[in-house]
Image (cartoon, rainbow, N blue to C red; front, side):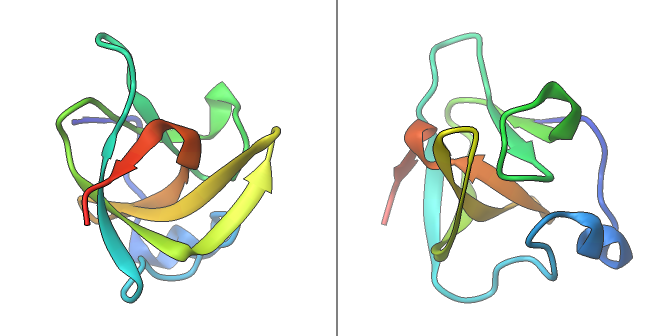
Length: 98
């Protein structure tokens, strides 16, 4: 797990669509990315290097709320919880495990 910065609970309102980490409608997921790359956990549902807060590599697991979806940069994003860090992940690059 590579963190680019950890958000504290009191800072989550700054994350677009923020609030608390998902607690319902959770589904276990894993990245579906090429070897040597990662799935970015982002502060906004948009692809931009400046909004990455964590890097999730193949084999790692995290939770997504499939009922909380947003669009940006031509993609759809799920609200996710990755080891207590919450943000947005691109739906095109994940596999739901349950």
